[in-house]
Image (cartoon, rainbow, N blue to C red; front, side, top):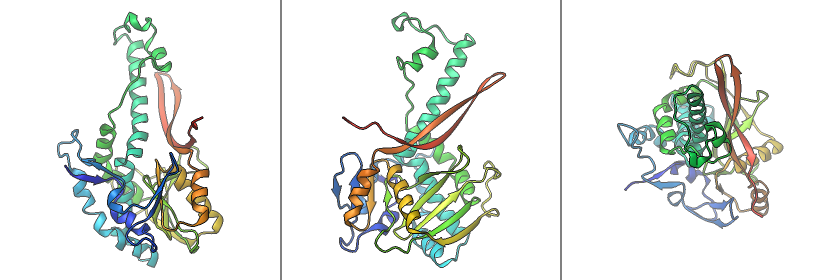
Amino acid sequence: MPLDHYVSQVHLKNFYSPVLGERMYAMRKGDLKSFTPDSESVCRINDGNTNAYLREGRFIEKFLKKIEPRYNTALANLIEDKIDDETIFTIAGFVAYVIGCSPAGMRIFSVMLRGIVEAQAVLAEKRGMLPQPPKELGGAPLADLLRDRDIEIVVDPKYPQALGITTILRQVAAFGNFKWDILLNRFDDSPFFTSDFPVATEPTKDSWVNNRIVPLAPRLAVRIRPDRAIDRECADFSFSNFDYRRREISRNELVEINRLIVRCAEDVVFYRDNTDWVQRFIAKNRHYRVESIERKVSTDNGFRLFWTERIVAKRQDS
């Protein structure tokens, strides 16, 4: 049975500590336990990239063969300002893979799918297309049973993963045609963190559009800024709309980016340097994660559903 990494080892190795050799520092958000893993021992699931919903169950592995061997070259190109189509494809592919195949990404997408199924079920009941709920549930309408969580629709996380895999090239094309900020971190005492979900959500002035901030190495990150004008259905791998700007970030920006990385991590934060402030910083920002937020808009024929992602506070244990 293959042991598949949902965050590529080539990414994690960039965060190895010079003090530890071929290891890095790590801390769990749930219990603040720290440890020093290597890239092989974390962010992995037995048969994690095998998906029975697909005709070719290991298709994503073929895709990764185009991404992982080129990752470090792509980083060098970003740093040296030699960005070509292969660099764009590689970084966009890394981001799309994490979003589609990591446990956090599957959890977030599952909420959206559950919302769609619930909405369709309620509409179907109103139109007389479903039998009445059983008497054991009090005979209440399906909408009430769902609202009160007397019944629950459960989504197999492998299904959103399958959707993520089948649309991954569209995602790559979309990311590769957005505007990017190449963020250079010149502060040796405060490198970027990474995590088991290294695609941080950053709110924008448009409440339903988020930037993606991705730490690529301790001194390099990229901000991907979505453009609603881009047709995501038409894959353009010439990346004709791609544009970017490079800049050195301020210390305040660095702190905010690391805060987003910690808050968006599913459970584990990885870091190169075990300085005094790091563990306090993670402890302060650990009670958050990314959630899918739904908005329902009424129409003449029913309603439309919209989703976005938000960083929300988790309820703390007493």
